[in-house]
Length: 243
Image (cartoon, rainbow, N blue to C red; front, side):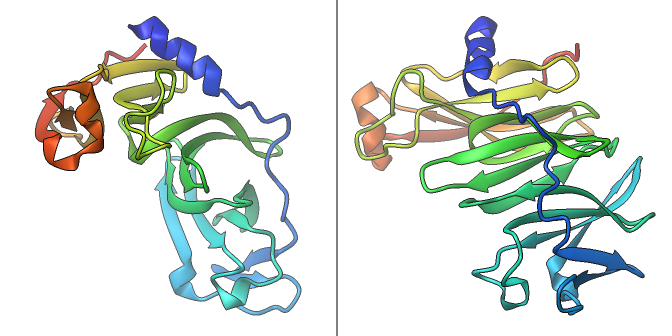
C-alpha cells in the first residue's frame, strides 16, 4: 500500500525551478515593524504573525490586496522576514489562492502553507535556501496539517486516482491520513481509504505521540452522496517510525 502513496506523491510533485523571492520590493522591516516600500505606511499589528524556531524568529504578513486596503498595489502573497536581521527571508506567491495556514518547522529551515484555490485545497511544502524559499512539493489535501517532528508533518491527502466519492462533490476523492517525511522525500500512510472508508486528520498529541483521526464509513459506496448515511467515529493511531 505504501507504493500506491509513493506513486501518488510522484503524480502531485511540483518542483519549483527557482526560489520564491518575487515581490521583494513591496515591504520592508525596521525596528520590528513592517512598512510599505512605496508609501512608507506601517502595516497594522494584527496583520503580522510570528514563528519562533531554532533558527530564530520569523515574522510574516499575508498580502491580500483585494481584501486589505493597506495592501492594495502590492504583489499578492506571503512576505516572510527574519527578525534578527530584518531582511526578507522568503516570499510565497498566492496568485488566485487564499491562505488558510502557514506553519514553520521547529528547525526554521522548512515550512508548509495550506491554500484554497477555485478547484482545490492544497498543501505546499517549501524549504529555505540561500536565495529564498523554494517550493518542493504540492499535495491535494483536506483540512489542516501539523508538524510531528523536525522533518515530518501529518495531513489528509485527497486522492483523486479512483475518482470522486459522489457526483454531488466533484473535488473530493478518497481521503487518507498520511505523514510526509521531508528528509527522505517519502509519503507514508497512517490510515488508508477504501471504497467504504475515509480517514481525516483531526489533531496530534505530542505528549502521547498519537494522531487523532476522524473515520468516516458507509455501508454501500453509493451512500457517500448522502450525509445521513455517513457514520463518523474518532480513532487514534501512532505515526510511522521515522526514516
